[in-house]
Figure 1: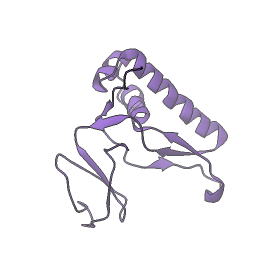
Figure 2: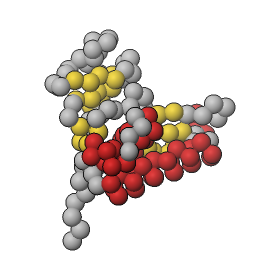
Figure 3: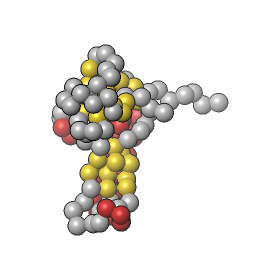
Length: 134
């Protein structure tokens, strides 16, 4: 029996839910799903300019696991760009140290050390929790 996968630590959630190409009608878009841990790998390597070994430590995974996650993220992004597909950032095998919510009224990201019931920006109770994977 294989051992269960270790959950990847995500420090910073994406500020948006995804991207879509210009010039393609919304009804014709086929999505590519970028997992939260793949987003985090791209953020650490390409945005923060970390070395793979350091980024792997940040995500609490081995360097070979980090490399696989990072490669899958790059393949997904390349596929979306070349084939004109939308990118949705969602799901994965992760955990977070903070609480993350997206307001379903103003669509802004709310983060904090404690659970909240209302949006920080518009005071709406329509919050969707993002830091839990199903």
